Amino acid sequence: MRRLCADDAITRCSAHKRERKGSGLFQEQTMRFLENRRDPWSHLLGELRVFSKGLQQDAGRRFGATQVVLAARTIYRPSPELVVTLAERTGPTSATVVWNEPNCRYGYQTWRAAVSRVSGVCVISGTRIRRGDLVFKPQMRPVPLNAHAMILQSVVDRIAPLLEEEPE
Image 1 (spheres, rainbow, N blue to C red):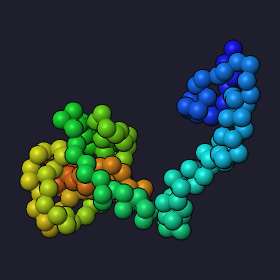
Image 2: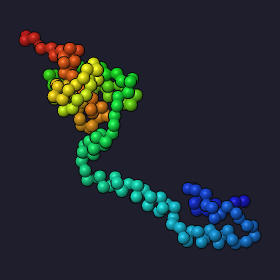
Image 3: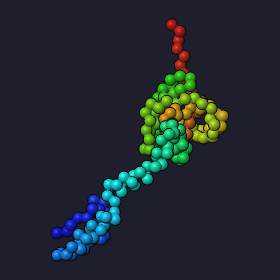
Image 4: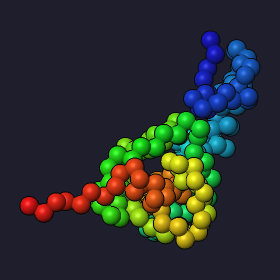
C-alpha cells in the first residue's frame, strides 16, 4: 500500500515514488521533505498574493478610469454577424440601440449625439465618417465593448425622425 505525501493534493512528489517496505526510509524522507517545505496552504496563499499584487496597486484608482484604460488597450472589431437595430429615438440628442453579435449583446443601449473626434465607418449604413461629422456614440459609463462604434446622425434622422408633438 502506497503512503501519500503532503503534496499529493497538488502534485506528485518525486521523492516518494519508491517505498521500501520494512525500513524507515520512507518516513525519513517524508520528515526531511516536510521540514524543508512550507505548508501547501501557505504556499498557495503566497502565490495568490503575488498574483494579485497588480490588482492591489489598481485598488486606489476610480473604477471608470480603470475601465477606460482597459478599453483603450483592447482592439475591438465588430464581427461579420453584427446586427444593429435603432429601437427608438428618445430625443434630439439620444437614441436607443440594440447591438447584437457573438462577442457581446447590448439590449436597449443608450447612444448620445456627439461630434466625431476620429474617422470611422457608420455601423448601420457602412458610410464613411470623417472627423467632425455629427454622430451617435454609445453611452460611456461603464465603458462598453462597442465604445468606438458610431452611427451617422443623418442615418438616425432617416430611420427614426424626431417627431414633434402636436399642440393640443
